[in-house]
Image (cartoon, rainbow, N blue to C red; front, side, top):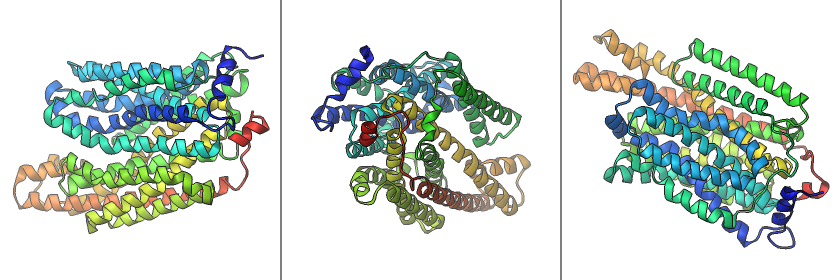
Length: 527
């Protein structure tokens, strides 16, 4: 017998034409869904542009500045799974609209923050609000587009919207900072979220699990603590502080995760349905999705740092030189459905990842100049884009529609955790090479505190060199840039090897037909 939720889902599934394909209303709804996705990725870029003027205005301590930068991503990563599960229970549209209202409010509070402490609190609220956006939008797509070909197109557009946000973020933010104060970059979100709140109830249908069972608060708390602890430890390592606190956080988080998994196997209504992993594609593609962001985040960091610190570009100039990269990701996402229809997902994902590896290996010749940077970044973007879109499609397409929110939360958690791990592990290897190379090539005559600063980061070395204004400073600058270039080359080699491993995993995982647990044969055909 259908309850109110079941009636809602039945009615919304009738929308579109009689063949079960999405109609005009769903495609307009997809345009609305793309709005928060633009902002989701823009927020990661605009803060770094605003940081110098923000520091001059609020004068935060070093520790406060780190929290201002990290608290958003920290709480975002920790809350994604919980928000995905919550969307399955209360409704994906309702969660999206609540999150949009909170995101708009938090953006205003961030822009108007009078102190560093209030800015940290506002950024924390912004991270929690952002955690509602990706899982609710992706799970809505899973239910709005039941035809597999249409869903691939929709997910390609969804992925492209994130790429567009990352591409235009530095340009829009840079233009605003020329004319307005640092808080203006955060007010971009307010009119966009207001538009979502107006159009969402009209264009977006509501979906929820018609029989969610009892919500297990203990499991929700365990998942939150486990993810936050691991992410905190990984971020500490990425920041160059692999001390006891980071190790305890990671080990403790993994222990809590083990308790969480054991509890899911025992309780009647698990917070995360582990049967999702019985699909031959779900688990492996979740790993592949995580590996994609493992290399993507750190590659972006390497390239932007090289452009600014080695080639001496401003943040805005560096942003302009990354436009081909962002444009390639958008194009790759949008052409994915047409190519996938001819080749099939396994061939396209593995082929795309192989192309991305070629791009990373091309970037090992980064000293050849801007042409090789544009070529390499364009190649790996064109390769990662279809892999990202199809991996996403396979993750949410191989689970029952009622569990789409949970699957979306897991996939986006994998993306955030993968990005943090990539920066921590590949970044640490690159940093070790930088320090080892520079320590052998340091010019004589430097004070010990200048040596320490130079070995810490390239930025520190350049500051020491600029302060000296002599031949020793000139040799230090040249040696530090050379050492950093060597470290970046190592990083791109590790990215290429990692993504080739992801391609091999894809081929292995997608050889077998995917079985969707908990669905009827007709549902499997539409998935």
